[in-house]
Length: 581
Image 1 (spheres, helix red, strand yellow):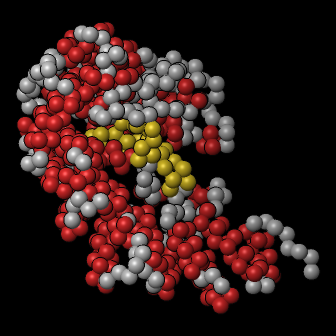
Image 2 (tube, one colour; image 1 turned 90 degrees about the vertical axis):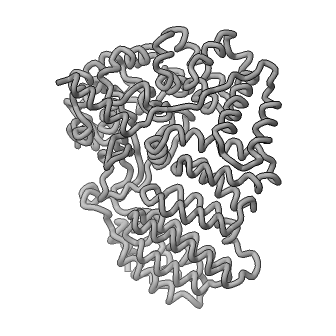
Image 3 (tube, one colour; image 1 turned 45 degrees about the vertical axis):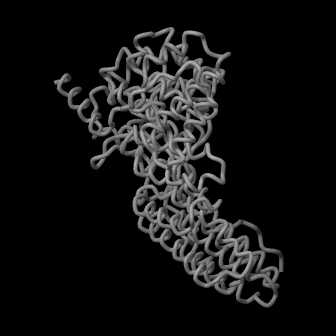
């Protein structure tokens, strides 16, 4: 039964993660320098055709550049060894470009000296470890700053111990450690859990299928005492087994689930964000869903509206929006090779001086055909629209294409939209009506996408952009009406409302607008909920937006001489005693 299950899992992985396939590489002639190879790349790429030949030539250029910049940091036999694995060589030099961090190469060299054939047979896993552990902290952790209590009394693994674990228990992993792209395996390799705890995971959850993964977050019981500063764990170490038995709050649940998944070879990470009930943590993990690989979440309660989360990127050692990783998973699911090719297209395009890019911008359009989910391509296109390399009409057509294909990944569309429209929305001089209408049309298309995607946070951001545009056009009355209407619409949201409310008040300044300002504040105060959820009411956590509106209301009432009303509000909501009569 176990053997049959592993066969099924292998087939499943093959369906969702296409193996990396690389074009045959022609050895770089000894007399070729990075400069000469760069010249050849530019000469061939001026035809603006993203061919396998020009992609391969760029890889040779990147390799030569790596050898030049890392000459003093790499052992003499490293490059000949690396050349024996095209997959590892190309993954390394493309992953290093353009910074060429010597710490990554040092970690890979350590692994190949220690494991030899194990590294040769698992190039993607070795790359993931090298990029992860290049940012290892002084205490041996490579996965960001865990809360101190989760590190207490626990001795974490070394890179070598962890790599050995995955080689030894490869057959127990839920994903192939050979064919899964290294960009996803970085969320497996950044596993600090001690080996004995990993063995506990294998014994407890090794037989679990993906259909049972969502419940992993809820395995640890919720510790309400921990909210009051008295965790049931007491002085016990926060091991995975103890967390499962004794429990914790959202952070411990997210830690538990993400580490169980990593121990099973599943790309995963702790995620956190602000929602209706305030700060929260959940788990994200890659799994098959509706015929493709997706980044799924457990504990990310829809009713609390955690629109965007933040996680730690092991490769950059910086915080990253979870939506970035979500898009990366989509790109790797669509085509790992196509993702690499699309990135190469952007790198080649970036080699050209600005004045020549107008003739080679077609490389970016062809990159979309290789993999439409590569974020670097869309950011390059947005920049090309701004600097005039790509004409506005073509840019908008490509943006429409992006909107059509990114219904499940709207966050990048907002970033690209702001980049493209930013210069056009400044309105420093008189703007023709057709231009204004065109800009408004683009904004409306994006707004419809965010409504359909149920992302009012992006909708509120877009409203601020549109309102500012109306202000810059000199249409202050239209802007005021728009801010007032949209602030009412978003009054119950925990995100974006305050910015719209502030702009409306700013346009209502002056004694002539005093009565209108008070009336507007009254309307808003009646719409903003005092508590976002029953949970907030239970723990007496008032909605920050509600508190802010009341503070504005009190200040406005006092400015108008209506001190009695202001005193009533402060006594009722802020516990202040009324002044003696």
